[in-house]
Length: 280
Image (cartoon, rainbow, N blue to C red):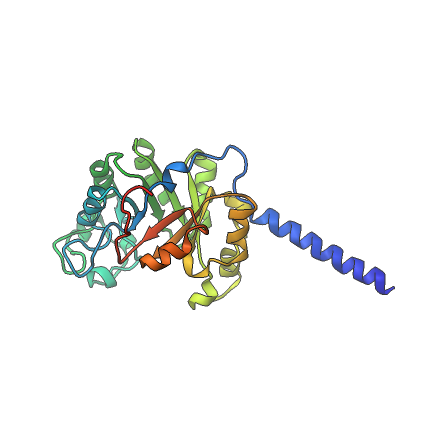
């Protein structure tokens, strides 16, 4: 009787392990070429300084990154009147010192605010794409606060017409699911972290996101994970077992950059300039 119970328990554990591996499995068929994204460092929100004249997600910061031959990571969301703009926070307060959210303002209304007390203003995605013109690869993080990802339609229209190298990523699995269904050829990445250790309100949604359990739905091409939690099992399995690219965010020192080599393939950096800028 005891042996029967033990066998049932072991069978149950084995079944759960298989289900887990299937749940976190990224795209395995018709995988796109991601080699270009492994050849450069990516400047987080541009090569920026929030205390200077080139704050985060500003055209000045993006121009500096292009001039240095660096890839760029940038954040895109859509205004009340349907204009894709580059801005990280959902709220204006930290960067613009104003109340409200991007989605509740028109583009013209947003032009009344400057970024971090500089002369820079919130740029359009179209302005950025025109300026970069394919010179460096882009990682475009799509910001969507809810399950309503209709913003993807508007953002994709601009990106689809762009002839330079880019990929998209998002914390919101519904964004990746939209691209899987509607633009499967675009390289897509799942952003994640250990949300419990970050102090984020912990619930079943954040548990699933931490452990990449939505991969069965989104089938990402790479995982972009908070490098502070590199040992998370789901992240490691995706890279080692499924051999998918891994992006580290956000690396803030040369020491950390060197320590992360071998664990990640793509590096998004901030607050310092890597010793070897440009191509790896």
